[in-house]
Length: 506
Image (cartoon, rainbow, N blue to C red):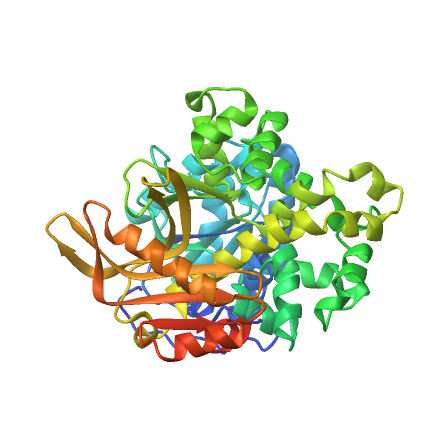
């Protein structure tokens, strides 16, 4: 990353996964390249950013400062106290402003011998909120350092790492007209664990139980500690009791998690509109037109709000593989989807402690609007990340769902998993490598017949062709009938993928 080989400290055993992030951060902060450098780390709440950065500072030394929501003067004083405590150094007088604070912090750390130094500022958006000049202050210090203005007595390389959970704020730090644009050499968006990593983190052996937990809380690391008192479901049948003690329990912190997540982003000002947008997407409205229709607005009226929700990490936007300017929006975080489809709809009954009754009544909603979409998403992820090239019939690009129109029947269908052949395009014709259906229920031989029909419809579409080695994939969370298994066994172009293969196979 810095052009020089750096010996990095061993990743702490208490830090699950994050091998690549640990390596990149360590190389960044330990680089012997002289001067002042900047990096940012960002991700949604409870993804483990703070834990990762505190372990880094413990391993390499340096200063870790956690910002709070407070006015400029108290924040400057707390920052000075943090430097004094961790560096055994105190400024001669209170910092005048953030330019003074950043300049003195960089100078005193740069004068501490020859070993690289690191300053981590966590929850950076909290400081920005009442000190909008902070980006410019950092820019000025970096520019002055690059010009040699702080060089006297400077013997150690210094790294400043900014971290935050307000995604829409952090993604703007290095973009557009930001003063810090072009000045960072490290940019780490910390994602949640995927479904395989989450199973290992939760230490759940049973595949169905691991999938059930994932449909509710996804891969946010922080939820494991928050639910520790209720134990961890070891079988799928234990999910209702676990939910009644946690997410559906009005006394539990996760009961209002969607409120906490949304209010964390300072750009979310009109909460009613944003809640309504999330509700519409959770209900299955995926196009801008249908989302706007649910709110009684025009598509142009919600474009800004959708942009905020996308950059904030609440929804994800996918472009249609086969049609331009046809974006599809989906809920990004399972717990946000769960709250909008279960908790918010049944808030009064849940607050009256009828969790198990609510859960029984919400079973159909859970299966169709939570389990189904979540299963489809992990199947696409499996194709992108874990499936062997042989399974896919050849190298494939990122998968997506695709709408297939049957003009003869005047019907539209959705193929859950479609991937283009990697690097192949015949003129303007797109080559399909993978077509697949993903269903949470048990599949019979009729599912293969339907997939063949949809593949034929797709191949008959103008500008589209199937690769000669294209594979048909059928995914099921409940398994396959013997008849389907037998039919697939004599079809080299067909692959059956169950939960075990999703979690352990390729």
